Length: 265
Image (cartoon, rainbow, N blue to C red; front, side, top):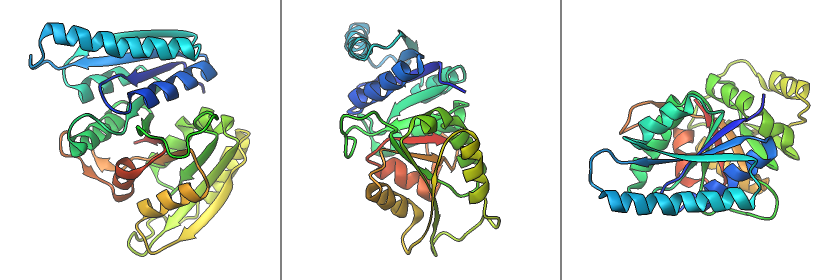
């Protein structure tokens, strides 16, 4: 498996620069075609001239990043309509979508948007914060933490993240247990996961951790302690838009993560 088509949502959010950096790095490394996708509102609230100027700015940023990071193939496009719906539809023919964690409007609306796309795009999504904690000269995805609970969403996330995991210098797999989040997976599937990753040439370290905090809080603390620069996890929620009801760990990560989060539903 390889990422050959990567889509980056280009919008006027504080995450634009970080999203372009991550998307361009991956496109260069994978030899992928990179698409910058902008969405114009269909409600007519923005005048055509303002839309045109906005697109010129966004696509200018995209082209500069793609050129600076030597992306082998790139293009941009603009569609009209609801952003979550249009990006999800476009994602059906992409290997990976890169989205910003923060938006320019209501934070709760942004989380609804992210949840909807993750559940409806048919593939994996990387959610990128505006300010990446511990950012340095290395590429994103050098030290990856997998949040494993034996469920289907995280299993899909791990399979989708194999190209990232093969590239990583360090992979940890955490099985978090908390009294406020009862254990629902009876079978310990950690040994099977480690053997599966080994078959793909990926050596991973297993971590079993008990704590009093919510798993989302535990995961954020563990990622910080390990100096992880990406978390791979499943996305659990009821896929309504707007007004998605979050899974506890999913909601905590989308609200508070300071490193990119690789998610699948």
